[in-house]
Image (cartoon, rainbow over the protein chains, first blue to last red):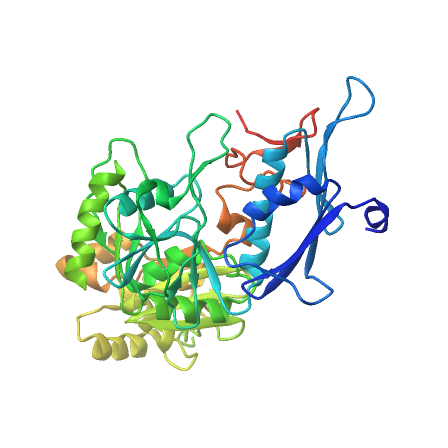
Length: 276
Length: 166
């Protein structure tokens, strides 16, 4: 860390989000602007002089020596996370690492990896890993008139209510595996602005050609599905179980493989409406 | 010979009731279990004082359904496999299968068969992404295409990638 500290840093951001502080220092001040775009929603400038984690980004690009390109190198505290020529990849990795760190450490929020939308005063939560089809389902919900909360995390408070985490919708469309991002406004959607109780938990994954025939799942299975996608599950199991059991206490849970998102969304909205 | 008196673990477990199911978190193994109503009853009545016959009688009263000791033995077997019973408190030589129980109980079996659903609780990195490569030095390959059983390697350009098994 001392070696890193000795490097000439041109700029830095120190911020807090969800009660967790982090800092990012860069060797090239021009990176600060794209950096701000990847910070978590509702971040605020930190007021304390120390942060819980310090990221260091050494910018790559052309070197003074002809024919030589320098790497972008990313550190989290003293651990090297990435070394690549691709700045977009570096920023994406930094965003992933920041989300993991904040989601795991947030003192008053429980981060569940899930897509979530609001519908008639209740939240529809779709827990699942990446590549399970959450984002396409959330997109279809938004196009059908649901309020966008997140396609990345269901952020739960102590009462089990879902808070918005409105990052741009990330849809994987290119061969690189890196997602292409869309603002929800581009889909004529609206972003939620208040916490909602969970009304429906959808345990599903995309299978090409599958017909969506959901079955009722028990509340216990809904908690298990969410627990399997909860960031601080190992760190704070008691609190996480309390929050998740509260979250599903008034919710309906459905499970089943789905095909096209639009077909599933029609059924799910009808079910959610009938349940409210 | 002393009759077997199963005893449920109480240390290093977190339990929460959800409806008539029971959620159990094993702090030692970082595994979570969802016990259906019958399995939850078996767990609660395994106090180390009661024999299987006594447990069966109590659960019958609690559930209000005909449950024979085959189903309870299956429940104990499943709880034991999940490390939710104190070691040595069940007879591991007398094993029963779900099929046997279904045959014995007939149509009511679907309701009274004890079911224990298990989940390995993920680390934050696992929870937030798809797969984490075995041997990944950091979590740096997150967000890149990974596959189960893959090994995280660094290419000549310094980029981490998931080397999938054939």
